[in-house]
Structures are given as C-alpha cells and as structure tokens.
Length: 510
Ligand code: ZN
Picture 1: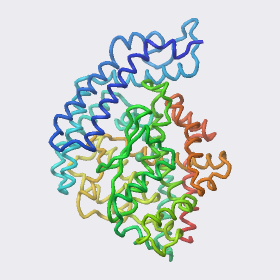
Picture 2: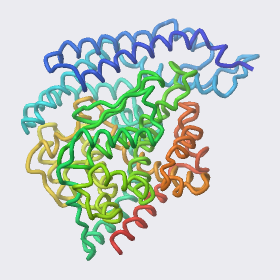
Picture 3: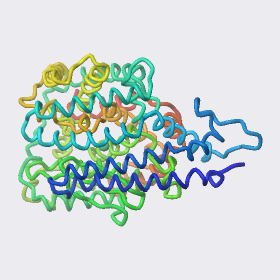
Picture 4: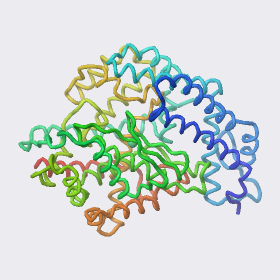
C-alpha cells in the first residue's frame, strides 16, 4: 500500500509553494490592516511577484514529471501501475494536486502576475471610489479586471458558460445549471415568507442596538465570545480592518479582523462571531498536511458554512443569549438597562430589506446573493457592459428587495469582490447558508443536548464536533462526498428553508 510518504518528492515542493503563498497572504493581511496608504503600489508588485513565483513552481516540469507517473494528466484518473495501490490520503492528494496543477497549467505565468497586480490596484481604486461614492472612478479598473477574468475563463475552458469556469474555482463542481434551480427554490419560499413578515402585526423595535457603545468594550466582548467558541489566541489575532476577514498562514497562525461602529452594537459582535467560525476551520486543519491540499479547506461554501453556523444558528439563537446576554448587559448596563433577553433576541433577528449585504438579516441575505449571481453571469458572458452596472444594480434591488440605493457606495460599490476579480465567489455565500443549517441539524442529532450546552456557555462541544467531522479532513473528500459523510445526503436546501420558516414564523407570529 502506498501512502503519503511515497509521495514525498511531490509534497516537498508543494510545501515550498505553500510557504510562498503564506508570505503573500501575510502581505495582503498587512495591506488591509496596518499598511500606510502610500504603500499600495509597491505592495501590489510584491504580492504579484510572489504569486508569479508560486505559479511557476507549481507548473514546473519537475512537478509535471512526478505527477505524470501516477496520474493521467488529461483526465485526472490515477494510472493503473502494477504494484501501485494507494491509501485514501495518497489518492486524495493526487486527485487534488492534479486539480490545482491542471488549472494552473492552463494559465500563462505572465497572465497570473498581471491579474494579481491589476486586482491589487483595482482594490485600492475601488476603496477610494467607494469613499467618494463615484462608480465612474472605479470603472476603468473594473473593465480591466473583467476582461482579464473573461480571458481566464477562456484559458481554463468550460462547458456552457465561461462563468462555470470561474464558479468551479471557488466551489469545485458547481455550475450555473446546478445553482439556478437551487436559487429558484429558495426564492420561491423566501419571498412569500418575507411578504408575510412585512404584513405581520408584530413590529420589532431594535433601537436598543443603536445607542452609543464604547468601542474598546465592544472589542473586549467580541474577544470574549471568540475565546468561548474555542478560537485559540495563542495561534491567532484579532485586528481591525475596513472589511472583516480571516486569513491563515498556517494552522498555528490564523488571523481574524473586525470593525467597530460606535452606534451599532451588531457590527463588531457578529463579525467577530462570523470570522471566528472561519478561524476555527483554519485552526482546525491538520498541521501534518500543511502545504498539501489535504491541509486546505474543502471549498468556500464549506468555509462560509462554518462562519454562518456560528453567526446565525448559534449567535442569533435564544440559547446563546441565555448565557451571553447577562454579560452583555453587564458590559453595557446603561444602554441595555431594563431590556430583557427576549427583546434583545427579537432585535437581532429583525427582518428588514436593507441595502447592504453584509448587514442583511439571514432571510433577505440570499436575495442579495441572487442579484449578484445574475449580474455576474451577464457580465462574464458579455451581455452586460460594466458602465451600465449602477442602473442595473438599482433596478434589481427594487425588484428583489423593494428598495433603491441613494448612491453607489450603498449600491454597486459596496462589495470588494469584483475589484479582486472574485467573480463566481458570491454564490458560495448562499451555499454556505444552506450547508450551515444542514450541518447544524446534524450536530443537534449527534451532540446530546447541544442547545442546553450552548445555553450554559459550553460552545466548545460544537467546535470539537466540527473539528472531527469537517475541519481536520481538509480536501480529503470532495465537497459533495464530505457533505454525505457528515449528514448522510448531498446538499439539501430543505433544512435551511424549514429553519427560517420555523424561526421567523415564531418571532413574527405568522
Ligand atoms: Zn465569511
């Protein structure tokens, strides 16, 4: 039986590549947290140089020569060499290295460097344009990035739509044909539910969340929740950035960021919990596999399922606040005086169509994603021109959510993704929502009295379960295989839909 040990000649250069990628990730983390604004252009060059080196190393003749011994490079099938029987980790490793290699091989190195540099620059221009509420300022960069991504799809090859080539990067195996019916099904249940909520006599007052809250105390509380979740500060940090994110250089150094608004209690709190969910995944990857695909998360949809489960299934539950609300009240006794846990629970679960995706409630959130999914397809397929985006955006907002942004910053410029070239990323957010509830329902079946544990502040029972079932496996299994291993079936939107119908039916007395 051949094992990972037999593949050392392959895993050694992969480890070097991972170290280069980690260094690039650290430069990006610094760009978002501490880098002075003037450093932007030089930083773009530094990151794109490292990414170019990593890319060249991955597609090097040495790796190709090794891989071709064991894998048919055309199909990815393992060769039937006499005497070669592989154990599961070795087989998975070859499957996933082939996936990365064959994709990288299709992209010329100078294209990879150019894409990286243009995205890094576009991101900085986007941030300024957003501050100035001026889409036109970002338009030239967006056009460049868009045409590079269309070019990338051509290099990668695709069936039916170039958008499929980009989707597959973030969520292996996902296609428009698979996503569209899923979105139709969700929309068919969420839109009527939203209507009923809007007609409900129950009106939730959430003004308690918008008093003045000391920023240092908010951060302190976020840190306390992260510790309770099992996020390890010996192997992590919490910093501030304009847009909260999680990044990892190794399972022993996984960093999360948050933002704090003095007049909004939810922003820091829920971004800490959300990013903490991502952070637990990265801290839970098996360090023995670091540098190989087995030491990497299985997909972005899975990653998002971890953050959304903590943020919504746990962080917006009664059980969670039974334990944490008295502490929150003690931290902000002046602002929350006389307001009970039930009022707080209702306030953080208020459903209201809003302009900003990251601030959306868990029900309308998916409508924000559908809008982006449609726009992205049209852009990549060339049906929509970049300059028409603000108008299209606003029309779709009106159609889906019944509200229209008053400027581009709260409309088409709100997300960083397109400046980064991350077309095809958004659908993974909705997949994450669906996976999150499917996994959480399974956790409730398998962990005795899970909600009682949560109500007693014992969050680590869930962290341990997720670690065992999901985190430690990395990319050992495909997303679909892992979903079936964890829950006994493939991705199913029903648990999510039943969960929101039950939860909001109760809150809004439908
Ligand atoms: Zn996330």
